[in-house]
Length: 436
Image (cartoon, rainbow, N blue to C red):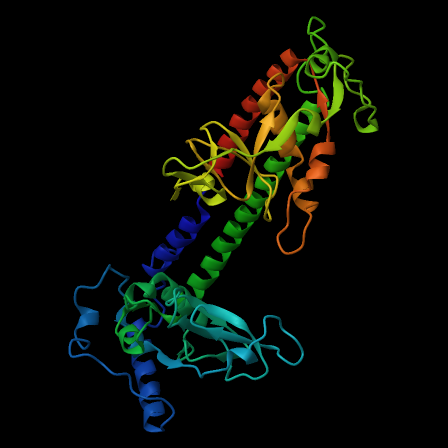
C-alpha cells in the first residue's frame, strides 16, 4: 500500500469539500473572509502589518477559472487575502545547535524546515511555516509554542480564529514548490505566494475536516508502523530460513547422498573434521569447515588494453558505469565482495566485463561447492561482518574473521536442494514485500 498517495488523496478530498458533510447552519466562508479582511485592515491602519502587494490581475483571478468546484458555502480567495506572510530574521549558523539543550531550547526553522535549536525565539504561538529558500522551498511545517524563524522561513499569520491546522493542510495541498524560481538556489517570492488561489471553508467545517484528517492519518500511521514491523519480521524470516538451512533442518536428508566428508577430502585430501559446538547437532552426513578453506579473496589480472566499465559499489548497485583504460580485469559473472566501507561484506555479481573497483575483492568459491549455498551463508553473517569491521579512518572487512567463520557443509546434493528451497521461499517473501 502506498500510504504517501493515500495521505495525498485524503488531503485532496478535504480541500475539495468532500471529506466531511457540509452543515447548512455553518456561517458561510464569505462572511468569515469579510471579517478577516476587516481585521487585517485595522492591523494595517495600526501599523501592525503591511498590505500585501498585488499584481494587476489579482482582483479578478480568484473568482475566474478556479482549479475545481467547491461547496456553496465555501469561497475562493488568495493566500494574501486570508493570511499575512512574514519572513523571519537572520541568525548565524554558528548559533544553531543540532540538539535541544537548556541553553538552546528553541526550534529554529529555515528554508528546508527545522535547522536545529537556538537560545532565543522570535515567534510564539501556532503558525504554519513556508520554506522560501532551498531545494525544499514550499515545504510546510507547523510550529508551536516559542520558536525562531530565519529569513528563509515565511511565518503564516492567521486571523479571526482561522484553524491553524486546516491552514497547514491546505498549504501542503497547494504544493507551493511549483512556484519556485528555476535557479541553482530555488526560492519563493512572498508576492508570488500571496497570489496563489486558495479555497476556504467555514470555520466550523475547518475544525471538522481537521478532526477527520487526524483520524485518517492516525489509521495510516498505524498501517505504516505495521508495514515497518512486518518488513522487519519478513527480513528476520529470511535470516531464520537461512539459519534453519545451515543447521540441516530446511530439507530432508537423503541417506543415498554422498557424505560431505568425501566432498571435502576431494578438495583437501588431508581434511580432518572440525569440532564446533555451535553445529554439534548437524546431520551425520554433514561436516564443518573454515570459510577460508573453500573461499578466497583475490584480485583480477592487471591489464591496459581498452576502455571498460569500472565496477565499483555505485555502478554495481545502479548498473550505470563510468569507464577506465586500465585496471584489474574481471569477467562478467564474477562474484565480488565489498571489503572497504560501512557495508563491508556485501556481495555483488558483475554483469559485464570490467575493471575491479578499489574497494572490491573477487570472491573465489571452490568449484566443488554450490556457490549459492556459500553466498547464502555469507549473507546470514553479513551483519556480523559489518559490526566487526577493522580500521578507523576507513573501516575494512575483518578478513581474519571472514576466513575463520565455520561453515556447515552438507552433501552436494543436499546443498542443491537447500539452495532451491531457499530461492522458493525468497520468491514468496519478496512478493509479499512488493505488496506492502
